[in-house]
Amino acid sequence: MRVRYGKIYIPHLNYTLTVAPFHRAPPSIPRALAYVERTSGNTATMYVPLDGTPSAVAHEVIHVLAYICDHYGMVFEREFEHMAYLMQYMLGKILGYEWSDVPERKRR
Image (tube, rainbow, N blue to C red; front, side):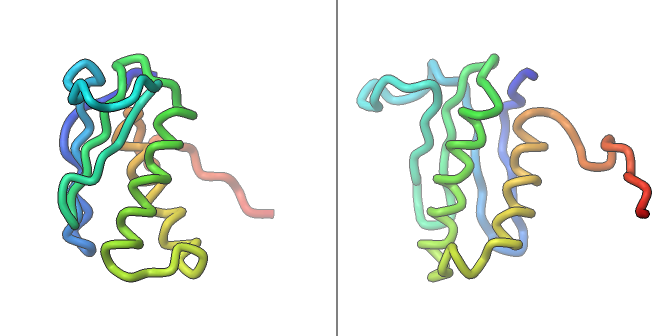
């Protein structure tokens, strides 16, 4: 999958994640496969290469979710379902798929 760069806005939290090419990361960041930094209380920037692996992107999304919980005073462990939906949403936006593209499974 190819990474899609741009801004991801989460309206109910007034939170914005910017996904940017890794080569635009500040020189002070450590060498890594991807990196995320909190840029303010309700914004973060994720730096990831165009061919970033889904596991590296997921790893950084977890950091973003932790920043969101910290900013809003939420306890991560009590927000499992909320965080799981946000992770699905962000991964879909970054990795270029929509949940509507996934065929529905028939219930038994």
